[in-house]
Image (cartoon, rainbow over all chains, first blue to last red; front, side, top):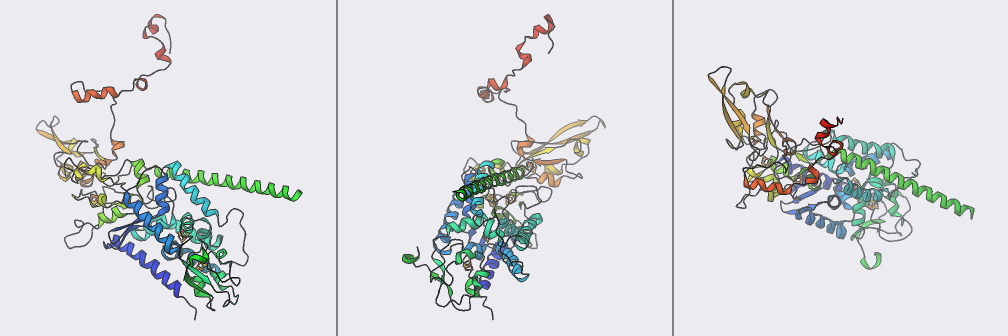
Length: 268
Length: 276
Ligand code: SF4
Ligand code: SF4
Ligand code: SF4
Ligand code: SF4
Ligand code: SF4
């Protein structure tokens, strides 16, 4: 039987968190209130999205202390512990793009790898910077005005309206357009978390001795450029673009991949 | 040599194209954002910063809307939840996505004493300081969400019919709206009871708009920026010592008009038949 341990754990986390957010509005629960922009944990601890906070700050006005403290807490968590785990364990868009990706594989749309001239994986970092510049020019948080992530999240909490169309657009883009198009090439939030989480301690580790070179991991990985060590070296995946989703671990039948704590002396 | 030249040319071309595409993207993105924030006729929760600043500072978390719908007082007698006042703008609402607003004819603001929506705001886009009274206590009467405006021609009280629905609905009864008594000359034996809104007291809660009996409310709340004029510092109340001080703020060079006409003396028109 296929191993789905981390996939199921992730879906449970994603859906569970979304439900808590939803319940805060629908039933007045005080466990996790607000949206990613800014949340309250247990009605007490502020949390805020660092990239959104940065956009609002670059648009020129000072924000309340709760948001600043909240953004700091989130940065510390992903910087030290989670890496880019926001993308695979929290973000609801991940479910949409994973589905598109899965369908792509089922429909065999991926025979040839296309090399796009302007849509590189590093494009997202440019968009991230551009978002801050546009925020400064226009005077509002620019990515927040179009972010499919919070549009989807607010859709789940408060109702979708026409906002659903951007979520569908991303699904279609990832399915028929570019493989991992949104999360792997465009999303500035994913880019921000890649940078924040670069040095985090939770890492996937490869055991070169056990590897049979089946390449299942590379097929399933949404950021497979980070798996350059497969069947070459027994080291950790240290690239910040790894989302710590654990799909590679799930699909590996030879125990050649597993989560580990970064060996600070060796891998840094 | 030739291939390195080629490489360089290719590199330059790619760079140029990337810069160009980035600029194009930036322009489109800015254009969209600029468009998206231009939704003037929208009412914000109590304590909201001036619109321009609010649009940036509000982090679009929805905590205000959640606090509003889940407040204790928002329950029916049988304990079921009522709809909240604050909505979060979504795609298709033609307001900046994710920002809170309310529509008085749907659910007006009930002016809660403890202002749960503003208290919970983490970004201070809802500014508690603007909602404190002289004793430094929270005071919802300080809120300035908008200003109620009466359209006289459709308000049936101005026809001479008896209606004081808005006057009675107002939480600041006889302060924000007063009734002006006038003689009805048409019948000769009745009185007009005319609702008049006072902008220094009205909070813009919209309860009057919700209560108004006409098909489309004859009293309605507009953002204050749109509902109010400004006399300017060159008009002062000569009988009011305090108001007279405003005259000092005048910017004479901005007020005085300089155009072709002002170069000539008025007498020139009479004496030398100058045409303008
Ligand atoms: S890349 Fe962006 S959309 Fe994709 S999972 Fe990460 S934050 Fe969500
Ligand atoms: S390397 Fe593994 S954990 Fe990291 S993104 Fe790829 S599949 Fe997920
Ligand atoms: S003051 Fe108005 S907007 Fe705020 S919680 Fe009460 S009803 Fe809602
Ligand atoms: S609580 Fe404040 S920051 Fe959050 S949506 Fe409401 S106004 Fe905006
Ligand atoms: S909006 Fe209407 S009901 Fe509310 S304070 Fe003003 S006049 Fe009174």
